[in-house]
Image (cartoon, rainbow, N blue to C red):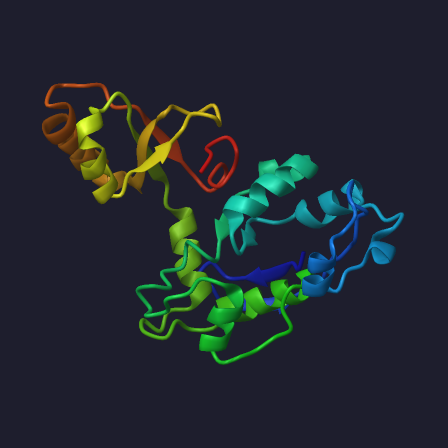
Length: 235
């Protein structure tokens, strides 16, 4: 973890001391992971991440940023309760990279396209690279990447569940941006779509007219940065 301070409009001021610790896993590290990360079984032997230290570092944070927060948040919350109390944002999915004519989402690719290279696959180095990426202006709009990320993170979204929608309309829903949830996560077994609050009324009218063809009840869940990417929301 690398804490940093920033302004509400996305300017980064200070990058603070990193917290980097190893923990011995329950199963041996494979040769493939050692090749990628350089971390060996000998390096982690007897090591354990301090929950108190994690809470000390995370406690003052206004926002946790991860590059693929949908993975990192669930992993972090299972290990340390403090992460479940924080707002989260994702530098991979909440910056409009595609609109900026950047086709890849991997941190290494985005860094390269932004004009810098780094030695990837070690946690602290990846964090510093992400901070550098967020500090830079986007190639088309010129807006700071962190500013775009903060704008997206601040906006509540609505998850619309098309529960009980006719099977014959599945391709239509998929084409409109709906995704299938199999119900194994405790959430409905249904098609769903995340949209802005402004688009909610129109989306419900669409479902009633084009999919259900009746005045159906449409379940909606409001999502904010405090639960986005977590197991509480899923997906």
